[in-house]
Length: 126
Image 1 (cartoon, rainbow, N blue to C red):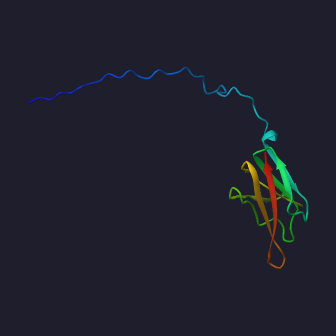
Image 2 (cartoon, rainbow, N blue to C red):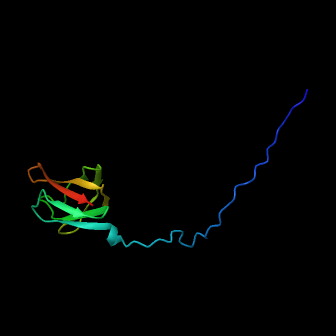
Image 3 (spheres, rainbow, N blue to C red):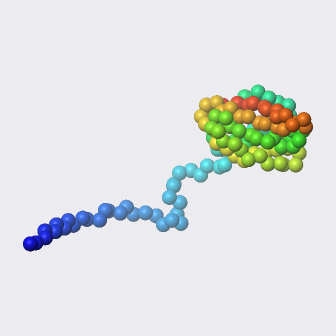
């Protein structure tokens, strides 16, 4: 009675030399945030406006409603709901991602009578 054990010697993979982590691994150009994001200014009472941008990230700034900041800012194309911030006499949102093509944005305000007032916008990304 015996056992037959086969061993295969595997050579370890060759490792490529790499730079220390303190050196930027990506030697490409550094992109300024202003080149990849945009601020979309919404005027009071304005609705159904189409904006055009070449950026992938946007944030909104606009007027307060009767009861203050909008209750909701949603990119209906992506389903993303932006964080709405009170900026004294206006509101602003955090930056959010846009899809290529047309993005449908919905801004909802709560009125004094408790009803919702919805403004629709479109942002076209080239």
